[in-house]
Image (tube, rainbow, N blue to C red):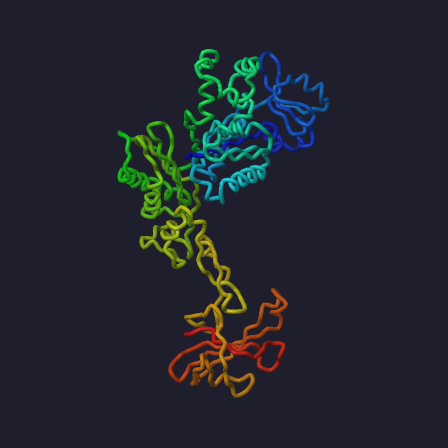
Amino acid sequence: MRRFLALWMPFWRTERLQLSRPEDFPPDRPLVVHALAHNRHTVTGVSPAALAAGLTPGMPLAQARSLVPDLLTAEEDADAQRVALTNLCSWLIWLSPLPAFDAPDGLYSDTTGCAHLYGGETAMLDLVRERLKARGHSCSVALSDTAAASRALARSAIDRICLVPPGQQKQALQPLPCSALPLPEQTLSRLSRLGLNTIGALADLPRAPLAKRFGAELLTCLDEALGRQVRPLSVFQPVDRISLTRSLVEPISTPEAIATVIAALVPVVCERLMARGEGARQLDFLCVRVDGSIQAVRVGTSDPTADITRLTRLLKDQIPQIAPEFGIETVILTVSANEPLEAGPERSVLPDEAGSSETGLPASLIDRLLNRPGVVSVHQLAPRFSAWPEDGQSRVSPGDMAKPPFAGQMLWARPNILFDLPVRVQVTALLPDGAPRQFVLKRQTHRIAAADGPERLLGEWWQTPESYGAIRDYWQVETTTGLRLWLFRKGDGVHGWSGSGDWFLQGMF
């Protein structure tokens, strides 16, 4: 089941001006945008302050000025609005590889298969609205099985979030007015005179009389909203993005044929990336089927790369997610996110034939894990500064491995095997603070032939009160049987406030 998100920005025209020219259009002053229509200027957009003052789109500008004497006005600039909406559509690619225009004040996005990346559909809608508000735009968002239904639901109220479960768009559309559908004003007026004010009332009528009285356009809008008819979205592609489009001689439908197309496109993309000194962080592979619908897959990398083998393997792993149906006639491969390739000790601009990164784990393995369905995150262990050895590692994302939080050198050697929890032992020492001579573990006595230490570690007194004044004295010991172990004593052996004086086994060399 496909899922479509629709965005509606009711104050788009005025917010664009208030963001670009705040000194001329302060947010607290009523502002309207007007355009010439039928030989008179008509209001096409209002600000929240103007809406609160009783102004609405569609009213004459002269009437608006009579209602609000100190009204700020600006003539509509269609070209500037189109450029701004294009920039916003390019920004929306972070959500899914299939954004589209809903001009003049809305956007679409085919989010099929993307919700799990953001914690579910509810969290995804909240994130979209939160990020859009951070850019200064109010919006209503809706998600359903069809783009037309999502559009109608999003435009039914200001500042609304509407999530329709799969297959429930008919029930969600029933109470909405017919004006929620993109119908001409003349058709809406005729429907109103007949008492057909809601989409539910319209959907229950016989189709033949509706088509005879209102034409096929009414039934087309209704069928698209209810999912009976599909109109493919015109997917937006930024001009500055690296993108390859190939029209196939004959439609393809087998995994082998799709893999062949991928193997032909990836080297060209990598060549263009290397020419720009950049590496791909995200690739979108779009397959246009013969019925006009689009199947899209997206893969990401843990670091910028232009490695042909690595990117080809990632895309081929996603082939099972593509449903060719009656065949694919056009394919598009786009680099939707890229970063500069930086040469240095942490990163090389040359492809790594072994497929391994400087951090020790194969970069190709990290990428394949990150792109598997259901995998939320992948972490690696990295050293971090900590007073106690058992806390000396932290989980970091693969992209942060090049900059570990702790890169210092230890003056004392550390054991090869470090226990998760120190093991309590009974130690005999010549003096309270002297070197250990023997210890008992699980009722077995081990005599110590040599000992080196102590290495004194102090607790992290700035973190917790319990760590203030805490001391550990570590000893490297070798038993008469050849075992090399790491022992420590809590406290300095003299002062009770520094520790209990108990001994523990921490690791093995």
